[in-house]
Figure (spheres, rainbow, N blue to C red):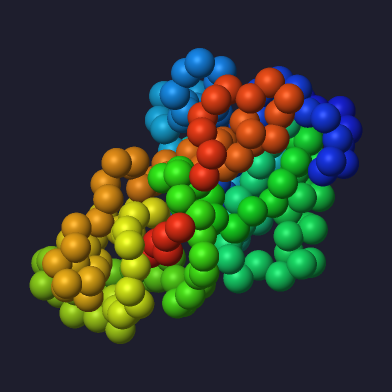
Length: 250
């Protein structure tokens, strides 16, 4: 699973390409294999998503590195040594937040190369989410910085109070922003789209139109990145070609 060099974007690529969603709170990896549906790659604990945490804890024989669940579980006891709430093998398509500038995109690609990845493309998360549903992104808008960490922080700020669904919605009322654009289809991408208030406001804003729920929102971005990766190879798995705008809340 280790790539030895970074290939030019126009180079001929063969073999499988993984799609990586570097999420704020969770990350996910997927692959589109020939003749098969897109597959989400589970981590070593069998989970389909991994907490976006890395920790370095002091040990007798040096610093120990922890990743994912292990890093998250010790975060409260080792805040200074734990990295979280950030964005940043084989061939890979890596997704980044829509607000990333050119230098941040280059840094993400360089980090992938250092990790042994042959990074074929860096694409926006909204684009990857749309590809998962087989649609093209015509435009993106709204608060591109908004993510699951914002909701988590509001809850942490008020954790001493009993947290009910009504209280949760009250604390985050300014984060539930309505979008009044006319669209053909609504697809949900990102774990925060599971929040009933988000779905309720979307349905109300779009005259009762039900959002599409065909793909797990936690996995949709990696799913779309894998589709793009498969279509960049010379041995395309026939996952299809990709006029719609969609709502994203990661």
